[in-house]
Length: 403
Ligand code: AMP
Ligand code: GLY
Image (cartoon, rainbow, N blue to C red; front, side, top):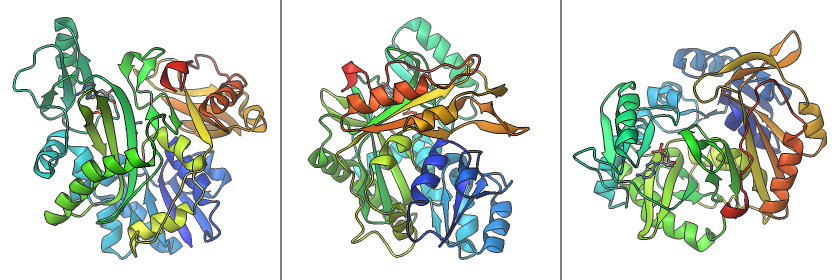
């Protein structure tokens, strides 16, 4: 099997790492990939949102399966471009990816499917949440508890294109539940929790995610099944009934409120950095499962998680999430890997053979252990070995309050 992973972040590195363990994998390619992925396969200088460029590459390499990591190419229809020419793709069509690409579309689908989510509000009054309707890399949501926060949130949200969505502010623990979908059948993965705020104690602005862990206490198999039955299956059935079936990964971001679980958002792809904590726990063959979702179907496919736990700490540049960091030399990655951590590259580059920063989130350090506490200890021990000027990370990922 020849597989092409599309994207260049930590999620794609984690996907490439897990796919590389499949006995069915012949060749691994990535576009554009990153220095971490380059150690597992061949990276090609084609952008993730360049549909025609990816089609030419996939044709030339005779790719059997393309796995599209990020949301932007999905929403832009890259899956459709490849599929039209007969290439099997893991990732939804543009029509189905609207579930992530437009928050108002997602709300409409949820209403039609009877899925519980935050109530839409006609007037912006604190407390409430202001969201940019379209894609915003996790940075278009403003939680406004006071008038001042609301004024600032409305102003910041206005910087994004398109309309705003205003909804009720929900309180509770957050949980991400991912499921592989073949258009009809839903196969859930182990739950994970993400840490969205940039600062310790959930302070500061929202980011793409500063860390994750899996499993999550209380979210056992029965709980996941209940969520899949009330959230994923109705949405998958609704999209199929509209003639735009969803195939790929359906990510439900949930708030566990006192009144029960509510959907905060859908994503049409693997979450980043949750994937980095979920994949190291998987026992099964990820390539088989992704191929099943993309081609023959998921019936009979299983992808169980081991009892072990995983924790991921994101190392970001000093100005993240406001600005990226580039060209700063990174020290200590080899030492962290030697300490038994997985170091996934999220925003790195090679400059004259040396590893340098190249993005907002730069590295994801993942460790596995018998318990979340043990995995956490190992992850932070490895983090201590890595450094560059300005490097920042949260010190409370998977900390005591969360597990
Ligand atoms: P989203 O991109 O919609 O998941 O929003 C990003 C983050 O904003 C979520 O992970 C929550 O932390 C927060 N958020 C979104 N919607 C709400 C809501 N209705 N109530 C409280 N917090 C929310
Ligand atoms: N970690 C949140 C996301 O991938 O959207």
